[in-house]
Structure formats: structure tokens, C-alpha cells
Length: 158
Image 1 (cartoon, rainbow, N blue to C red):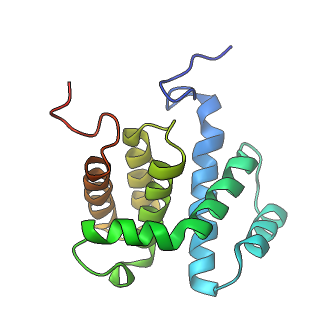
Image 2: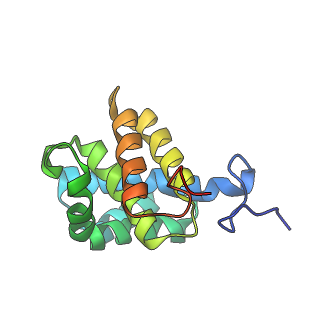
């Protein structure tokens, strides 16, 4: 049996951790397509499953992420807004999606520790965002984790 991290998943960097990492990347791409096209997520999910290589991807987790962000977007935007330096609608498309994914994880997938969520979001921002996306996403998600009092987010805890 594989060794597990605090969240019940194998530590990052292990081959058996990759299916969820790949699911996050696919979810980001699917949510980006939704944002750009305006298509519904069910159709986008079907399209992705038919046209993308899903070998090594946790398909169930991909669907959970896409549906979760889509269903909770309004509430997540409302919760994130006080932590932003400008209106949510003025954020870059990739910033919006990465922040929604991170906030969804914080609220609905608490077994994944906040540093893992932030690291994954920053990695995706580096891959798909503009030059400064990673720094902005990192700062907002860190601020969000502290404001929402996530375990381990307060450096003064101990």
C-alpha cells in the first residue's frame, strides 16, 4: 500500500498522486472553455472525455471539480471579493478560474491541505497564466486561507 500524506493522498511527486494533479489541470482547461464559450459544463465534460487523453487522470475528481466550481461559483465569488484588490469581474480569466478552483478546494475538499492547493494553483498559473498570474494567485489564496482560518494557515499557530 502506498504511503499517504496528511490528506490521505500520496505525497506530492509520487506517481500515484499524478491522477489528481492531472484532473486539476483538465478541470482548469474545462472551466476556461466554459468561461470563453459560455457552454454548459456537462457538454464540456463530455467533449473533454471524448477528445482528450484521460489516461492517468482521476476522471471522477475532474468531474467533481468542474461541477463543484460551476455550482458554487456565485458563493465563492462573494466570499473571495473582500480579499481582492479589484472587482472579481476585472480579474484576468485565468486568475478568476484559479481562484475559484482554490476557493472551492478550501470550502469543499478540506482533506487537501491549503499548501497543496496553493502550490497546485501556482503551478497551473505558471503553465497557463500571464507573467504575474502566479504571484497574484499565490497572494490571494494565502490571504484567503488565513481569512477563512484554515488549519495551518496562520503562521502564529503552533
